[in-house]
Length: 427
Length: 141
Image (cartoon, rainbow over all chains, first blue to last red; front, side, top):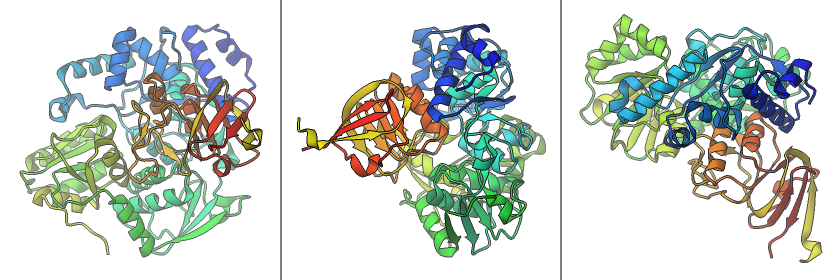
């Protein structure tokens, strides 16, 4: 890989041990990819969390948070002192919500450790956005901006909807990018790799957020990690719909970039979306395909006796909280169910201010932030059958927690929360 | 050993070093976060053909990575827990797999002259020379 003089100097240790380790990881990673060079980035989203049992134990036995960052963010066995971040860096979601730790079954000592970790990260200059959806709370990259983000649902969103440029980075590469402002110039940083590869023709009206999730789930399964171009979208989808669409496509497959012809910024037309590429495959999405996706999303669900409703994957926007409150206001949850809703901490403040938190609490549900069930392995004690309005959560939660999970619309989930029984379905 | 039963594949280095062991082969891509239990190296994805099977100490032969960007962190933990694959052989380059192979410190090769998924079967003995980009396969009896 070709390095600039500045990059070579960092690799030689001129800027200290931590940056040397960061550059060493970026060079090993870039060479593994087959990248020819690095690119400058001034927008990094990653995670520094150390509250999972394995990392907790690691930090305690190796001497604290510098040791955790050295190993898990720089791939350095040698413990180096971590300097302040060099570029604008945001923290993604965590493993717990310290404000709801007791309900989430998180011990007090873990909360203490978590808060210590947060203070440490803030001290480095890391923005504590604490969400999988930073683009909903002020980190909105510009079209063409080179970023180094992890979190697959956020990566696909900023690439496709905003036209920013990032690959799905990992914990170690984003840690290294925070300290150096560099990331391998590969994949979706390069114009031609962003062109469409597969054509998807819609045969039905995709309307609800749940419908957009199913469409994403189906497409991801077919195209895996390629670049689908969707045509025939009749109504321009909002942020929440595309958030769920992308999250689902990045779960069943590894989609990091897509185009909606005539809608997303790099697809003013179908021709522009494909550029010099010819579609390697064309397929339709109609009622039959929607049913296949629905059944795949519900593959673990057997018992109609729902005891846990999980909403907010990826983290709910304020619009989704408002919509939920319209469904929930004046109702009471069944004594047999718990409902947890996850949103960024900033959005939670807005919900408090707008009276939504009260509507949610009055119904017997809980508005949480910073984490989610799958991420933190957090479910109510004894929960066996979950329900979610996110295909991504329905995909991951059963695998991670060994429970059943229904997928349906937000309204289906609210019905289940109130009645304790799942009665969702599609035609 | 019978020489005629050895097959050599040539590819490109991803991570250097040498390792040999029994192959575990899947035609399905593997998810890291939410797809494996890093402490045992077991695949946990609901609809995966390797669900319940561990890659600990095996040469993992697979198409590539999918899913969450927590891929590398999961394989990183698997290495520290002693549950990572000892080597990786795969077809599709992505940032997830490149970073995952690097932090797993597992000799890894890709971009082959022949498709490893057509040649290697679970149980074959596979020697991976990451630096030279060479994978030597001894078919199981």
